[in-house]
Length: 174
Image (tube, rainbow, N blue to C red; front, side):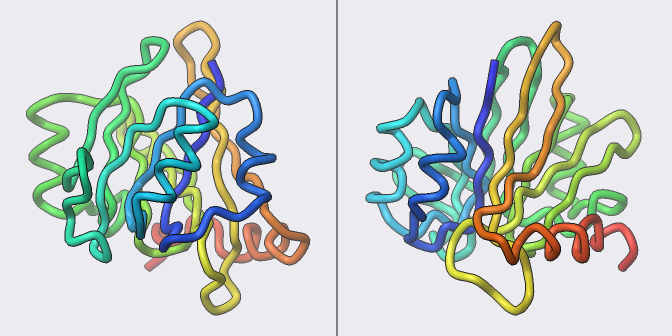
């Protein structure tokens, strides 16, 4: 199974996103959607599960502050604001204790992240919307084979390849 991961679109679906998500079976959006048209465009590619972000008022149509879904045996928890993988905000910690997960997908910081902490894989695809600072513009792809998930970032422009390396996992060092 191939899953597209996106966050912080802020009302923009770049043409490069459509190319990166070609052939995905499902799309997971980690908040700051920015408009129903974003979900409409993504649903034209594959089914979408989304959580809402702060620009969405943490509620956007069917998307609430968090979302959960199991795909190909892998349990996903989506939240927009995590804080840091090594010190998630209290509400996230409580949700993970109440119902365990394999992978936490988050956004908000616009910083790429890909790290396992205490048996949970934390992944932030970075922002796919308007460029912010010198941060990358990217999405993620998760491939699930035999119940194991492998995630990677996909830069959406030439400049973002170096920016992914420069900003990867900065949330662990802060």
